[in-house]
Length: 372
Picture 1 (cartoon, one colour):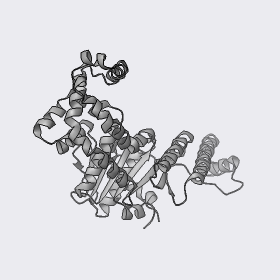
Picture 2 (tube, rainbow, N blue to C red):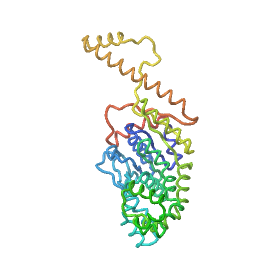
Picture 3 (tube, one colour):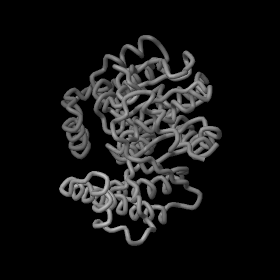
Picture 4 (tube, rainbow, N blue to C red):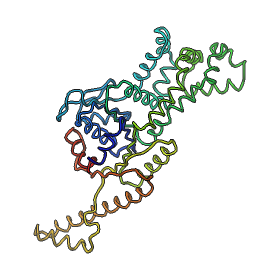
């Protein structure tokens, strides 16, 4: 047992983060498949708005309530794939915590709520955290693998609970539920010129023209806010608990590694432990450490095999180009390893000849992800 197997054995939640286009979703799906093949009831949840998870699993679609993955020695119910339904998840949150059916309907039909649940900055990431917590609390799964949005948004994912908690601060909420506020602009503009300016900016940002909708939203949601601060604390406890670990997926490219370095610094500031870095789609320098392997020598070898000088020369040039890419990848990865905190493991997965579009493709990653 080696590589990521140790993380699978020790943790209940594995969160995969990384830049866009580095194979983060396929890595998350491959880890989840490994857990399911080991007999653990596993769910892989994608928060990436792009629908890459279904493609990686060879499925047509993945639903918000979960789609059972079948095939490849999987027992029924062992692997479930789920894509976050932002609006649906917010509605479920309201239905779970609303004190009555009347309050629930009032919130769900409120225009400000509908805007908040679909486009307010950070609301997507927050509801993703809520979904993760619900899956964890349900006890339905032994292993939860989370595929986050690209790096910068992944940091939004980590900071969303506190950001929303600040937005829903009780001192702020008290403002919105004052009687003059629910009376609308006509009354509000006489109360305080500065307040009027601030709320005009709010209207411009949200596109909600009727302030009474905002006031009604906060009044209806007040019961939910009471429990919000403790819920945010529980979220951070879960993210930092020994049950949870973070895996950073990166490609050995300069720009990607710069973003990866930023991510490492931010998670350290948030006191969230990073366990492993997966270098995906790497190229290997085959002649590393060997002296005297020159292009001319490769050309002569090709000539002996093919007997055609033009083709032999082109193949030798191609080989030299590949070696140069492999040398660059190796140097950048080595440089990145030096900035990692002690105890963070690194894994290399080579660049495959084709994209990953099936369970068999995901399984082909296992010898590298889980190498002893």
